[in-house]
Length: 552
Image (cartoon, rainbow, N blue to C red; front, top):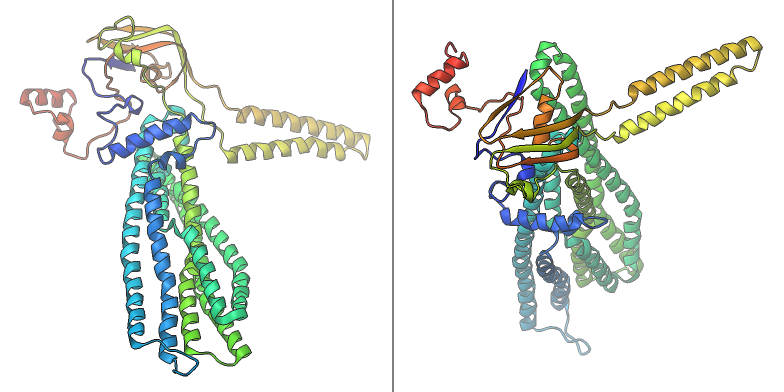
C-alpha cells in the first residue's frame, strides 16, 4: 500500500485549524461570530472563563431598555385593580351628608384610564417581547456559529471524545434552550415584586384574611418545589438519553456495511430499542409529573382566593362589591406570577445547564495552528508548494481521556480485588490445612487481579519518530510501506492532526488532503467524476476507462 502527497499551488484549503476570513462559516452572522470569537478568546485567558460573559458584551443596553418597558407593563397591570376599585365603589356609592360620591364624569375618567392601562400594557409588552426575541436569536446565532467553528478546530484527541449526535444536540437543543429563556428573563425579578405588591393591596382590601391565603401559598411551595426539581432532573436525563440515541444511530448509519456483513442487525436493533424504550419511559414520566405540576400551579390561585375571601366573609359577615371585585382582580393579577414563576425558574435552570454543556465543548482542546512564519515561508523564504520537516520530528496520537463511568468502574473493580485477599485471610483461621488453602486461593486471586490490571491498562499511543522530510514544489512523492507502518500517520502529522513532540514542520501554501474514507456526492456518476469542472469528452472517457467504470 502507498500514500501520496502532491502539492501544486494553489490548492484547496485545509481543515478548520487553518480557517481564515474567506472560509470561516456561511455568511449568516459573520459579525456576531467575530464578536464572540474576540470575547471568548479574552475569557480563555482568565482563570475561570465564563461563556455567559463572552455572550453578554453589548447586551446591557437591550436588557436595560426591555427592563424599563417591563416596568411599564407591570405598572399598567397593577393599576387595573386600583382603577377598578374606584369604579365599582363609585357605582355602589349612595350619596349622603357624610359621604361624597364620584360624579359621572369622574367614572368616565376612571373607565378611560382603565382602557389606557390595557392598551399601554399590550403595546409595550409587544415591543418588549419583540426585542427580547431578536436578542435571543442573536445569542442563538452566536452559539451555533461557535459550535460550528469549534468542531472544525477540534484536535484529533478531542474528536475521539465527541460524537456527531452530541454536537448536533448542542447546536439544536442546547442553543434553543438558551433562546427560550430570554422572553421571560425579566420575570425573574418582576414576578416576585408583582406578587408582593398584590399581597399588599389584598391586605388593604381583606385585612388579616390575606395571611390565610399566604399560608396556603407556603403550604403549596414545598410540594411545587419538589415537583419542579423532579421535573428538572428528568429533563436533564432526557437530554443525555437523546445524545446517546443519536450517537448510536449515527454509528449504525456510518457502519451499516459492516453490520450487514456480520449480520449484526438484531444486536444493534435491540440496543437502539433499549435506549429508545428508556427515553420513552422518561418522556412518559416527564408528562405525568408535568400534568401534576400544572394542576398544582393552576389550582393555587383558586385555593388562595377561596381561603382568603371565605375567611374574610366568615369573620366580618359582609362583602361589598368593591372589596369583592378588587380582591378577585388582585387574585387574577397574582395568578400569572404564581403559575409561571416555577416554569421561569425551570427555564433558567435549563439555560444554565445548556450553557455549561456548551462551555465544556468550547473549552475542548484545539488542533495545532499554522504559525505565521510557517504560512509566510519563514526566514528561509521557502518556495510556495514545499514541505519541510526537520528535527528530527516526533509525533504521537492523543490518548482519549477516561470517562467518569470508567473511573468509577475501575475504582469499584479495584475495591473488589482488594477485598478478595482479605476474605481469604478471614476464612483461613479454622485449621492449618484450610490456612494453606486460603493462602493458595489468595495468591491465585492476586495473580488474576494483576492479569486483569494489565489487560485493562491503556496501551501506549502510536508514535512516529525520527522524521525528516523535504518535498519540492510541483513534485509527486509516494510513501510506501506495509500496513501499520505509519503512512497515513505521516500525512496526519503534516496536516496537524497529531501531537508534535519534537522537530519543526513547515508547509508553504495551501493543502488538499484526501483521507482514506470513500464518499460520493448526492448526484450522478458523471457529476461525481467532473466535480464541478467543465466536461472534456476525451478526458472523461479516459477517466472512465482507467477506473473500469465503462461497463457500469
